[in-house]
Length: 283
Ligand code: DGY
Image (cartoon, rainbow, N blue to C red):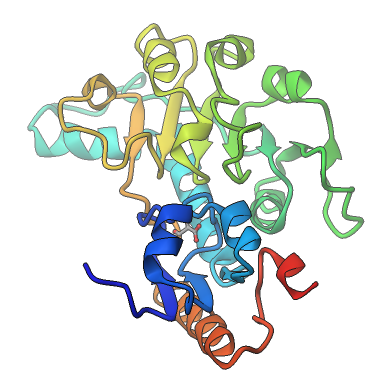
C-alpha cells in the first residue's frame, strides 16, 4: 500500500503502527486516530518523538465492555455454552440433580484487575448480585461512589471467586496472569479476560484449565488473535471464548466511530485532539 502522501491515519487495533510505518507515511503525517480505547498496537513513544498526536476512544465502549464481561462471567459460571452444545449434540437424556452444576454468582467475591472506567462499570453491575468487590490497581484511588476494596495482587488472586481483567497491555501487564498467578487462584475460580490477550499466558492457562486447577475461563481476547483452530485451549469444555467482541454493540461502535472521526478531523486541521494519549506533543 502506498502511503507516501498520507497525512492522517485511521487505525484498527489489528494495525501495528511503529516508527517505520510512521516514516513511510511521510513527514506530512498529522495524526494517528485509533478506533479503540486500547492503543498497545501503536508505538506512542515513536509518535511523540515525531510530534504526531495519537487519538483513542475512551468512554465510548465502557458499558458495552462491562456488559460483555458480565455476560462472560455468567456464561462460564453457569456453563451456558457447554449446556448449549450438550443439548444440540443430543446428549440431554433427562433432568438430573447433578447435571452441569455451576458456580454461584450471588454473594461471590469479584476481583477486578484494573479499576479504571471499565473495571468500575463491572463493579457497579456486581452490586446487583450482592457480590463483594475487591480490586488491584496501583494507579487508581478508591471511588466513594462504588463499594469496592483495594487489595494487593496476591490477595486478589487468593480471595476471588471471579477474577476479571481490565488493565491495558503494557510491558508490566504482559503475562500478569502466568502459571504462578493461576496457582494462587481458588480451584473453584473463574478467570474473565476482556482486556488484551497477552495479559494472560495462554500456555499456563491451558494447563490450569486442563488440570482443573481453576474452574473455568472466559476469554474475549487471546494471544494470538484469532487463536489457531487447532489450539489446545479450544478442546476444553471449561473455556468460553468469543472473537474480541466486548465492544460490539451498535451504540458503542457508533460512539467509537464518532470519537475516532473527531480525533482525525482535529488532527487534520492542526487542532488539539479531543482524546489524545500523548498530549506531550502539544508542549
Ligand atoms: C478497544 O477499544 O480497545 C477494544 O478492545 C475494542 O473492542
